[in-house]
Image (cartoon, rainbow, N blue to C red; front, side, top):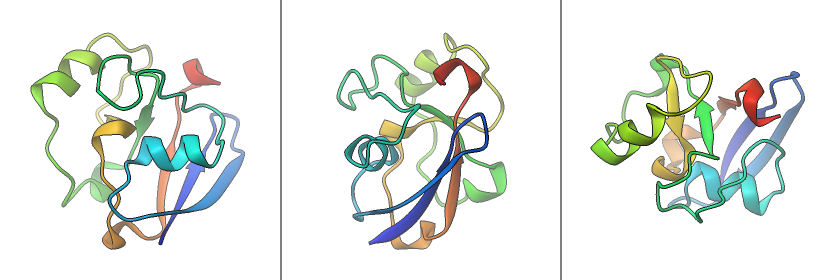
Length: 106
């Protein structure tokens, strides 16, 4: 298991264990973390798993695909560190990762 801390826009933190191979979105929804809905079930078609991952922590993550980029173009509060949680698989190297959520998903 990999420990991930999800941080709501108001600063409330939720530290949960996520199985390797699951996505950040799955880890949040299975642990009932507020702010990550994953309405499409992880097929990169709704952006309700929009989150922020520090750019320095994105090394080693899969590059943003064309489909993810298209979805991110339509989100409110996009930043350079924006990602869709459904497109980020959890690995043991991510232990201790902090994932922030935008105000629009509070």
